[in-house]
Amino acid sequence: MPNCYPPLERDLKRAKTEDANPAIQLFGRRFFKDQTIPEFLIEFLLVATSPKQIEHDSGRVAIDSDACFPELATLREWPEGSPLQYAPKSRLNLKLFSLLGASKLETRHKSHRDHYEELIKGIGERIELAGGINRQDVLKTIENLFLGFQRVGGQRTWCAQSFLPICPEMISGETIWKDAKATRDKVETWQDITDTKGYFQSSQHIFLARGGEALYLQICNALRTPQNEIKSWLEELDCKKEGDKEAVPEKLREALSFGIGSALKDCPSGLGLLAAFIDQGVDKDTQKGTDLDDKGLPRYTKCGWCPEETWKEGYLFAVDLLRICEAGLDPVERLTLMETACAVQVLRSVCAQSARYEEGVDNGGAGPLGYVWAVSDPDGRNTILKRISQRSVNTTLLMIQRALRCTEITENVAEQEKTAQANGNKWTDPYKEADTRYGHKLFQTLAKRLGFMVPRRGPGARFVLTDHLLRYLVLTIVRPGERMTYDSFLDQVFLRFGMALGGRHLTKACEWSGSHPPAALNGDADQWVTDMLEGSGVLVRLSDSCSMVENPLGNGRA
Image (cartoon, rainbow, N blue to C red; front, top):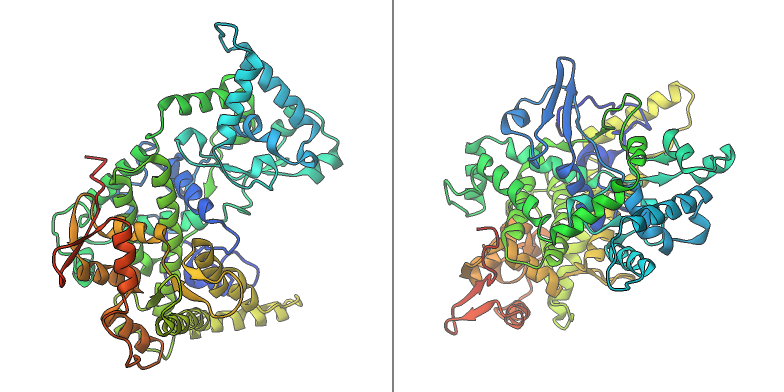
């Protein structure tokens, strides 16, 4: 069974506990099918930018709020049974001001409408006008400005929606409005619903379903890894730059913390100041009612855990994020690529962990991650590549299913059934939920949302690359302003992501999927890759036999 990080107590023998589900036992708490790609990043940044602490029997360890990640000493000496805690901000006033007007009419409670009018009036009174500008036009312009940063949840109640995390002041936790409870209790005023706990719920993890927390913990898990193990992993990945900041945990921690902080400050500072003013400048009581507990202290949320073995994928994820943060990119494009990094990391970690626990199969020839995703040309014109990729998809999904049924997990499930029957409780086999919400259906759904798997519906699913995914690979494999040979690029795509784009890697994909490489698989199998790279302007042909892949974006964080 996977050991968990942080080292928490888990109840795996009783059904309906947080960690009882087979997929959570294997992958951690938790990657969930219904969490959208933007929400993985939003939750990750929410943990990274919020005040954090570790509470244990001997006291409390406060984590420097200016650093995205705890000190290495803290990560390596984590107290037993103590989860990471963070204090997210709800930012209800900012959401109400920006999103109420675009929400469904039936979700607008009277107290919400009344407080919206108070906010509008209070903000309007503080606006200084010149030259005959209309006050209402200014307010509407500001409202539309923030509405334009709405990123996810357009069909939800206004408070359950999220902004693009363009600055720290616009990153907020999940808040669920309990309309039935408010109707039953006949509450009418904003003060009633914010002073009394329970009308706005912020601990259910319905939309921000812990996936971002798990990704954050994977990086923490990687950073605490001893230097000699990092060195061995880099050698396996054919990356041997000793002393480089990516190879030294302390330097990587500092660089990534700085990179994430800088990425969130790329937008004009006035936007963050305006967001903070709307949220707290007119009404400070709302924040006290939603963000503080009964003692007036920050309301902390407990993180879950990730498997200890996933430090290798966590290290790769940290480097991916660092290279995106350091590239000279437009702020919005950087955030989009960071969203992609989160989604790819979920796919990568689910498969790498499944490869470790799939019984009766030797994944040794599949590369350091233990699996191979055979990628076909986007147009599907090469029928041989198409069939190889389809078989690769099927093998991947089967691997995830089999891993969930490894001996120790099935023994835990059998014990859960026995305990439920002994207590006279109804027993429901957890494997259906494990497969459809956390297992191979999670992988399939997320890969299709990412554009990595087509078609969206119907049979014959296969892996493909979009222009966006190819750009992501170039930016995370080739450092800003540097270049590498085309063959080295293909090797690194295989070693770091498990993707086979051509040549001998496709041969390995066939072997991993249990088939023989077709005789017709020749040196032109990756022609579509060179065409896409050339079309993107990142392929430099030095001769007929040698090409270079370059990252033309200079270091934006020098």
